[in-house]
Length: 191
Image (cartoon, rainbow, N blue to C red; front, side, top):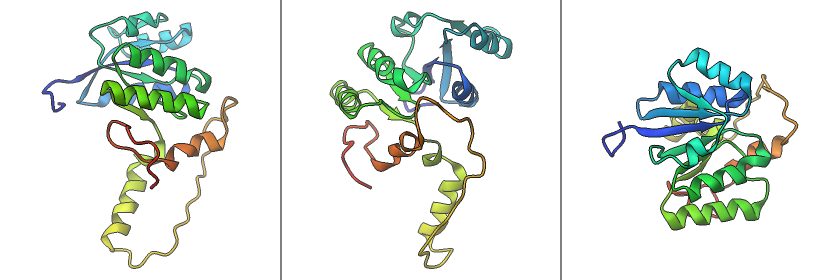
């Protein structure tokens, strides 16, 4: 349960390749109650309905943004839609998790960060390896000194995953450049 003693009522916008992974994680979380999934694709809607009978699924975004029962929105739409969707969610008073990148322009990303901070809303950009249990375990081992004095770490990703046409590797790695507070209010602090 959350610190408010109840689950966060969550909606997922976009249930394509990565959205399916996010939906699985949300459904498994004890802290989240998935209220609905919105995707314009009939195939995505069928996927959700087949795997999660009873879960509200539609192609209408207003089901999320106009709903008072939704606390947070998880956005997994194409990258060129992230700013628009996050802006709508924030203006509807929802906390927002946006799959990387947060936006495709720095000024748009800064606008989202500033607005979320001003309204006291959480705005978070996803990044797989910031929350990867293997990476975190290795970091903990290094920090504890159990590996000795580490001078260099090398890793190689062998599975490249889906090749995306909307963003390149720089967009995928850029979120690690900045660290922020829990409300994402200080995006310019360097690690």
